[in-house]
Structures are given as structure tokens and as C-alpha cells.
Image (cartoon, rainbow, N blue to C red; front, side):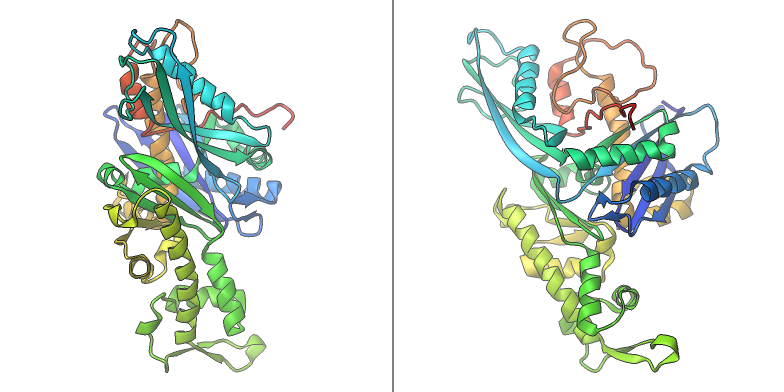
Length: 449
């Protein structure tokens, strides 16, 4: 699909970031441009509080990101993220007695089981973003993603459901439609963490066990992977803004000055700072500068990081023994750029920790250097996830002619470019790949918006 362009849009509480990418005939993704605009004041903790100002910022970042893209004949799509404390990630199991236990499990039974699980979790107050199959079991057999062909009287499906508050999800849709995104051919919305993982963690890490932590300005997302599957995830109200507010209050300085010294002098390793080290804060309206202890600054930061480390440890412990997490902890997002944070988290949890930096290919070396840092992990992951979702759609099974794919997690209404007629494929391949990439079935924007 060389003529298709995708814009990944990361809707953050401080900045809205965008990345424009394309995929060549061999499946390689190339980033063409990136852009970011401020969103502070109208997006808070991942939630939109001012539709008009957020829509204006979306239009601005879209214009900046696409202004350098050549070619008017290309189809353009977008994918945005959604996050916030309202996001819920729940495990759910469903059982189904089989009519003919001696007959091999058929593809239709897996789809029906998925539909039952989907209906069971439906809630008028929440919108289902993703339904990720974790595994299936026939009678007392082993967990597998490949139950087709097994025999037995009872089949069980285990799923991970990701839901968003319906009102907040609708607000995001309304905002998108109020911006210049309405002129784009089509788009979709996904839980941020599912995009971020595509940019910074490997198959080997997900199999061995790894915790991915996206540190935003208002919220942070924690996801725990094991056996190559997302096992648990939570959005917590912890972000860089809280550290800035603590510094402002603790040191009796303005928020602007607090942010400035956090960025330039901040560290979460207070023992490394000399007691005598100070920084001068400019006075108001020509008044004398105020000396501030860098040691006190680091103590404030360290305490907030300690809270984060405890939250990460708790989420890991819900899934596995922390000592068994061979892939360690991977930190991304703007907060991951805080000096020494990976070393601090490692010391506090006893789990190896690293900073996750994307390694995507761009059309220039300078662009690669700018974008391949932790703050663009979600943005680049959105582009990558969209193209992988297209690949999955192209290989979806067709059980009956003209039947729409109904397996939970399969993208059912994302506008797609013209494709050759689908042929029947092995559902087992589809099941193994759908765990790798799960896009939500975004609904069409209602006319009333």
C-alpha cells in the first residue's frame, strides 16, 4: 500500500504529538514527519476538558505534520490514542458446552465464544475498545491460542477487555470530528499502551516477561506482559505535573520556575547531591534572586518516584513474581527523560530497568534523531500499529460469504483502502496474530456531531 499515508496522533496533557508514516510494498514503515503543539489547559490527565481548543490544537498539529508530505493522490488515514484513569482493563472467562464433543473444534465455535464474551462484558456506561484473547482451553487441556481441531465437551476462552468511559470516549470522537481530522478518509482510536509497546519492547521481552510504563505529564500507564501477551494494565494518576506542583509548593516558587529547575537540575538520586549545591531563582519584577537547595529539589522528586516504583511493583505482583520478570521494566514518555529515573526505579524495585527509545526509520537522519526518543514512543507506535492492523484485516478468515468478521478485537468498521477479494485462511494463524495487534472497532461519527 505505497499510496497510503497514516497520521498517528498522541493526545497528551501537555502536548499533542503527530507522526506521519507510510509503508512500502515490502512492509517496511518510514516516518515522513513529526510535529507537536501545546495542549496544556484543555487536556488534563488524558481527558478533554475543552472541545473547541483541543480541536484547534489537533488541526494545528495535523497541518504541521502533513505540510511537508508530497503527493495529493495519496489516501490519508489517522489513528488516535485514548488514556486516563477511566480506562479499565479486566480479565474475563467464558465457557461453552459443545454439542458434539467427539468432533474437532471448528473456527465458528471460536468466533461464537468471542461474541458471547463480548456481549457479557457490554455495559451502557462503558465503550469496549479492545477484546484481547489470552488463550483457550478444551476440557482439561493446556492453554492455547490454537484450539481449532481439539476435541472435548467444554471449551473455555480467556480474554482481556479494555473499556473506556462512554462519555469521555464520545467527547474524544466529537473533538476529532470538530477538527480537521473530519476531512481525512478515516481513522480509529486505541488504548495508548497497545501502541506504545510496538515502538519500544521486543517479542523476546514480552515472552520473558516485561513491564512497560508510559510516564505522561498527567497520568502514567503500566502494562505487564508475559508469554508474549498483555496480562494486566492500569492507568494511574501519576505524572510529571505532580512532581512540578510538589516542587512549587515545597520550595515556594512558581510552577514555571519549578518546571525549569526540574528539567535542568532535577534528579531522583538525592544522595548524589551535595548539601551546599544551590540554584538561584529569578526574583519577581527585578527583585533579588532566591537561592534554592538542589538537595531539597532532589528529595522532593525522589519521593514522587518512590510512589511510582511502588505502583509498578504492585501491578507486576498481580501477574507474577517480580523476580521472574526477566525483561525487566521499560520506561517511556516525557517523564522517562527525568535524569536518573531508570536507576532509581531499579534500586527501589530490585528489577532491572531501562529507558525505551524507538528505533523507527525516517526519511532523514535529523528526523530520526529527533523522533527516536521516549516522548514519541506512543506516536510512532500508533503508526506502526495501524499498518499491522491493516495486515491482519487482509488475512482475516471468511467463514461464510459476505459475513463480517465478528471476533472480538477485530477491526470491523475502520475505513480501509480498496483491497483484493479476501480468500479463506487458517483461523489459527489469525488467532496467533490478533494477540499481537488489536485495534478497536471505532464507530462512525454520528451526524449529530
